[in-house]
Length: 123
Image 1 (cartoon, rainbow, N blue to C red):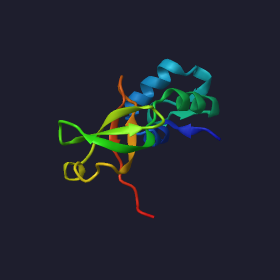
Image 2: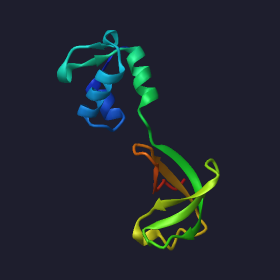
Image 3: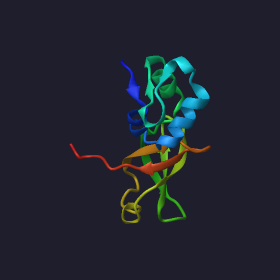
């Protein structure tokens, strides 16, 4: 890996540029960063730290076991987590997903993860 522009890194991790700039100023040492403003470059070591510290979305598979009281959610058992979690689904799909295996994306950006349904291509 070579140096990479901070704007490209922020776009890859789907965070805004200001948040990425705050992360760089608080967590990386001066030798890892060159340039300033929108022309900031991060070297290999800084990119590794950035990758380790930024929460990413994780994709799981799970079986829908029951409908939640809110029709926009279904309760899905995810084997990797070992528990049932509420998954946000489109309202038109909620009743039709009961008993099916679905893909669930965990958004880890907040204190507690939120789970959303991710449609996949049929192969």
